[in-house]
Length: 238
Ligand SMILES: [Zn+2]
Image 1 (cartoon, rainbow, N blue to C red):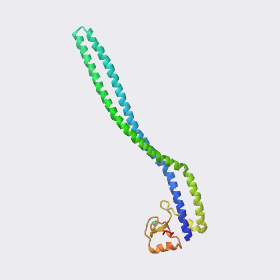
Image 2: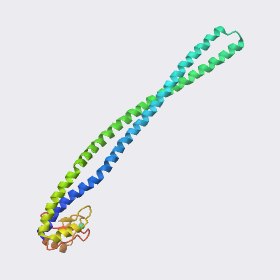
Image 3: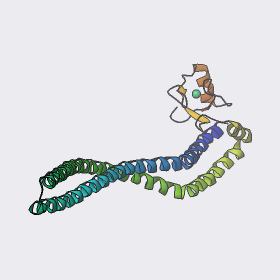
Image 4: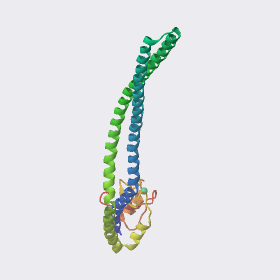
């Protein structure tokens, strides 16, 4: 019985590894997706700022064109002073010129505002660019690592399953019932057997009564932790 129990600890080690691999195989794809979305999020912040910047540039160019055509109109109107013949024509021309100058001034104000906005947004773009690069570098490094792990995951699982077969067979040869007891347990986080450590259950740290500790040490029959139900084993470190 005692040797079988010690072998169970070895089987538990193999199962723990298997449990972790299966868990990783299940969780990594979600983690990769989450990290990709973090990159996409940082990228979209940058893209939104760049779109704003393009919009301000467009406004600025529009204003420049309006100023240019406004100035051409103005000089054409001013040239007409030489040919006006009546006061009425003169007044009307004067008015047209005032309107024209006002329009130019307005577009100049708008153009300056667009330039200011552009300068401000360029600063924000530089910041967002830096943040994006940082996020991308960090997330991508972890994504590559996870993808690398996933690419060999099945291979790793197959290897562990093969070694598990050997260990399980060894226990079956000694004590079939003991292996069955182990296999039938669900175990918390895949832990079905644990060695006693400092007079406590190695799985849940429940302090065990002296009488039970003694029985575990003797190893005459299977003893479960009173608190978590894990199979208790006394090993060299117990
Ligand atoms: Zn326990």
